[in-house]
Length: 303
Length: 251
Image 1: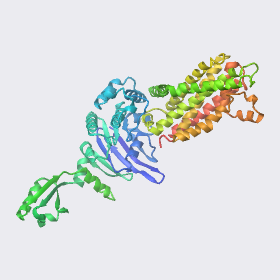
Image 2: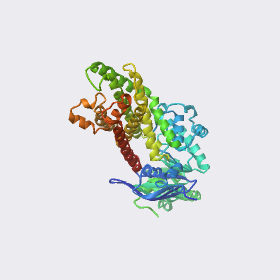
Image 3: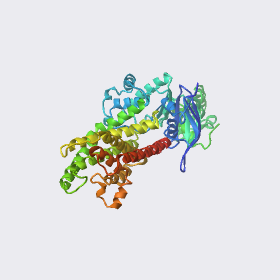
Image 4: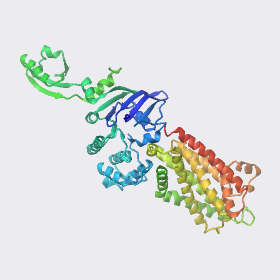
């Protein structure tokens, strides 16, 4: 079985700017994959190269085993892309837009599937409304619908939830999750790390045109982030010596990292033994934001 | 094939939906030209023997409107979708370069023909309609529309902004169509300008087209046909090469 996406040694530069500095990446069929990174990291360039909108200077890309340059017609049939910018053709209604998009992919009489997409994205009521009259969020939904008309096995969403309300986010992820469950491969770029954490099984982090981290979401969280215990002692008392070596002081709070909840018990016991009283305490989950900040702050890729 | 027919249908629907601006407006403009020029010049300008000036003017005006609208259709559709970003909807699907090109050019031809036919129908009120050889009329109408439609594709690919396209239209298309014998026979020009006109491909389109109406022309319609077909082939090759390279579309 060929991977859903394969990227080999892809580079792209625009004059001085290196957009992609040698990307290698493989995404398996059925994955829910996250592509994260700050603005300008090269995420959109990589997606555009995959979609044939950008020609790489070197390297090759395949979608479901089809080279996106040499075998572009087959490759494009396998791929549905939701672009980052809200774009639309103002002359047409939602249904016309989707019928045209089906036709471009060689599909006639696609109304059954179009209706299903519309229903799943809560667009049914807007089917015959002109694109011009839709709100930004509605236009965004149509973009998602357009990417799905040809039932692509690989779906790429480039920041689909930027500036989108909670309701659409829920609707959208419900639908995309279902498609992923049915076997579609999903690749997602987003700025909402929480979203990536909840959805993606595997994550690549990009910076300056390189992939600086690539692992399963749970591994990334384990490696770069931990459960933390944040507490304040009565009267601003110091921590017992045993704990203070591992703790970090934040104002009058102490932050202690731990791996298993069984360790919390020991920390509290030591505090009690030292005669101190806990005045305030919270625990925090490992957080992709931590991972992100740490990795983006690093110079070199950790092995 | 479905990709091509869909894109063609979309391009036709695009101008049809705003027909007031894309069809009615140019027909009105042509009618105003006809009204003014025929009124002022009738009886003052002698073209072919015994042919009233207004009758002479009709094919020129029809063709001028046809050409300008064919150009406007493909060029404005491309620049609009480029500027608005909606061009990606036709770049993401597996549409071949030739299907892409053919759909834009054919839609341009259809818009040109629709406007040309509209102008022709309006002119019936000003001069009796006559055809000598309908085949020449049809051939030059289609080829002329295709030539300017192709030029529109090239201009639409090249231009990044609306003002660049406007420059293309004002500094190339307008002079080429006006200095082509729409309003006069080039035989009434001084020898130097007669010579210059012979380097203008639009002159051959209009001259050949007029031959279909009156059986009279400045040059042989076969020569005109050869020039027009030659130019169309050259521009088609250029457009396909640019599309193949992804010029300004796939960067």
